[in-house]
Amino acid sequence: MAVPLFDTATTLAAIDAEIRAKINAIIDNGAFVLGPEVRAFEEELAAYLGARHAIGVANGTDALVLALRALGVGPGDEVIVPAFTFYASAEAIPHTGARPVFCDIDPETFVITPETVRAALTPRTKAVVAVHLFGNVAPVEEIEALGVPVVEDAAQAAGTVLADGRRPGALATIGTFSFYPSKNLGAFGDGGAVVTNDAALDERVRTLRFHGSRDKKTFELIGHNSRLDELQAGILRVQLPHLDAWCDGRRAAGRHYEQAGLGELAALPVPTPGAEPAWHLYVIRHDRSDELHRTLTEAGIGARPYYRVPAHKQPAMREWGDVELPGTDEAARTHLAIPMSPVLGREQADEVVAAASLLAPAIR
Image 1 (cartoon, rainbow, N blue to C red):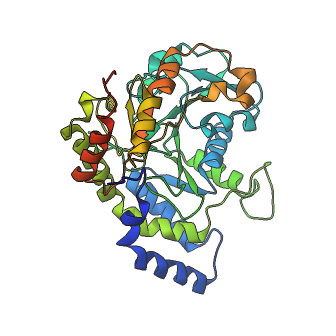
Image 2: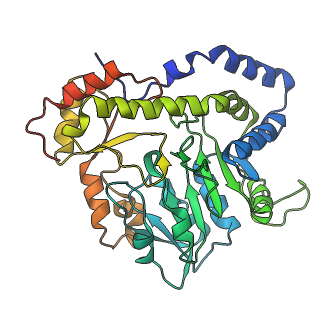
């Protein structure tokens, strides 16, 4: 049995008619930019996250840039960011004129820690970008206790929840989301959001996303053209009520892997304390991860290493990448994403584990 890395089509099939009806209603209405669907989605997303404000923007990268700019990050400043993450987490920083400072991660949880952030702090540190990678939760409150504001990059953590009911994206000073189609909550194109409890930050992000203007007449800032459009907002509104059930399915898929014995063949993802991750990606670790990748692929199992070359070693980051990050190096070498979706069942998990067992002896 072939098992795909993602299965968004099966997940969305049950609400296909509702999505198409929403798209047709938006077309009939004729409002396509910052209209009623965007306003409603912003309110519904904020309520879902337990935050006061959510601002729809064009994509997750813009969300990071706007969040950093709203915090006043600019030339001469430094922003700490993990190197084991999608490149955009670091790419957003130079757009503000600031310098990215790369910090290490815990290779078991894949997220930054107060200790790795503390090692990178300098008097110029203006903010920390804490990435909730693969759906796991970085300890943002402990990091903010170090005295710097945290920007939560929650692009991969929609639907994750803490034991006390709080959700990533609304844990720190300001949070950001991507709604890229493969995300837990995915648009049918690009989309993003910025989330905050601070009214002043909310106002500044809203101004920055529309050319630095509040009223389309007076332009107070050098802003951006970064707006979530009505079609994407409408599609996201249809999906949002289903997000928790989908994420329960992702957590169940993780349990299927555990029950199928995958932990005997590779190191399974480790949730941070108090977190119930909605696994955007299910990322295992193996000392021979490239061999495991080939073994799974040959068996028809979707698998992919995501960050073999971490952000600090990318060519565009060469100016800032001269730093030793042993946890990052270990994670980059050993990680491998295997199939994960809300509809992945025990039979599929058994197929993945059977294929993984073909690589012997297992070394973790």
